[in-house]
Length: 441
Image 1 (cartoon, rainbow, N blue to C red):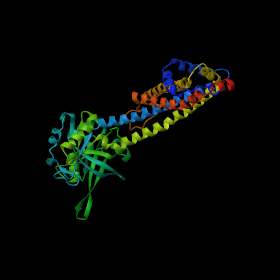
Image 2: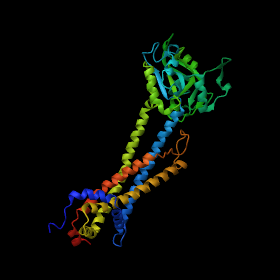
Image 3: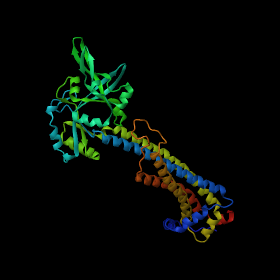
Image 4: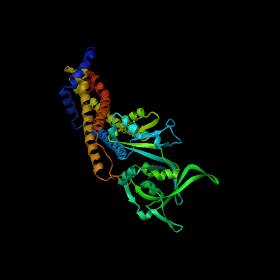
């Protein structure tokens, strides 16, 4: 009786590898999945297992595609902007004074000429920038003021949604017509402050000026010349544009520049170009768009990882149903397993049958989840089921269809299902033939 169960541990691993590619293990597993009159409950659990895996994979596909779409839209907005590389002077630059440097002291053409591929640079804009307090009526907010060249202002016209008529820039005071310098504010800032083209605003500089009453902040009136829309809410809420000479007049500085904004022809080469500029101009601080927005992209990556882990638990819970299905299947098929072993089936061969059965259940759920995820993503992209705020150009969800996501999610779900199938398949392999024939139903 002790020799009734042959021990073939040395060949089990080879048998599993042999059975893995054999079609008969899948055929036997499929036969076991067929419902009988006394196993309706088992078939119901099998359907629940397939649906659970399908919903888990669908959720991961849809959520990750939407999150990747938002990141792609953000990059698209950054590509459309003129800030691909930022060059900021430091105290090592001659003529540097409190964040400003004399424009005549910097050879801008020399910085570009030292690049390996100067043709990569599309534009090189000097900016007179400062932080200021913007006051409109009783409302007050902080803003970043950018004094730009006329060429840069002309490019900003493409993003203008409202502009003031020329007569709106002229105000009558003390019997005289005075033309105030103009500012261009973002759509979000205009909504926040209740501004329309032609309204007067006051800019207050934090830099103090010595006067007869002591140190007083600098104040100057401007008129809203236009409202722009860039698609980047953070920029629209805090960035105000004006002409460079108006910014220098407000700061009471002449021939100065705060930093340079570089626009590239190839957005993806920003990091490489930034390194080259840093080598060509070591006295300056050079940052590419990825470094400038590192906190934002890091948050997106963290959210993507957290959502992937959370949604993976749906597949893990669904795999518990597969474990239950296979365990009940092993108990139901004790007699058949014992007969197979009595006919000479090895442990690895029996395990391969139930392993193939579990992978068949999981494979159907994964394939259905990938297909359903693609369909749901396509529907969300084409139809406005979810309304987006007005800060986005498109009112539909920005969904991407990255084949790597589908492949990675499918492989990860398959690995989870495979791990879940190991225990019941090993339990079937350890079943003694006499026990199954004697106690099997």
